[in-house]
Image (cartoon, rainbow, N blue to C red; front, top):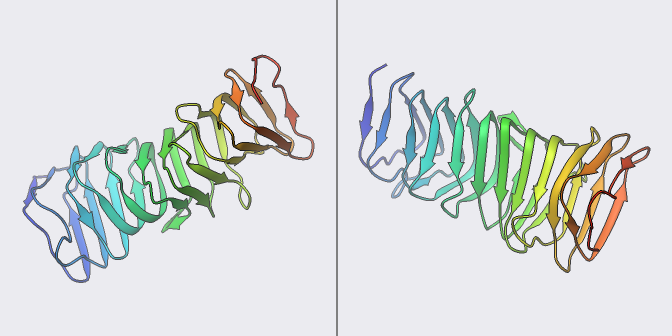
Length: 238
């Protein structure tokens, strides 16, 4: 399709921008003066987002690369598009709920947020998910991805008290996190966890948990009926 170009966008109510396979150029903020109640953007081309403010849900459906030059503020953020790559960790976004089904997701929100339902239930990424916060991340729906990375100084991740995740590897070794609770009953590999003076709880009922990186935490709790934890291949520090 052909390309679409916009300056500042202020729309009361529902706003839908659909270029099909064509490009979208956003030259100014969306919702800076009048935030739409819902916003949907669809494109098959690379997209850079300016500042976006939505009072309700914001749905992105992109099969290419999405970057940002401004903060995303919305109640719900839904990320769609087969093989899409969302690099949304360069700004301190402010959302309540994150969900989607795409390729690669990198997302930052230091106010904290929940993995839940925004039309789509949970967050599925065929390549990887990287979450970053200095706040608290909770969930009411699962994360499914081969590689899950958790970042953020003193960030608190409570992932699995009510739902089950499905990942291959868990990497929580890029920041000194706050407390971490993570559940995956299919089993997973730990590539590293650093929680400093805080506690880590892992849960895998019937699954097998292994490690290729060190676990460093004040306390380590292992849960899950029938779970197998093989955590003797690294020199852990708890």
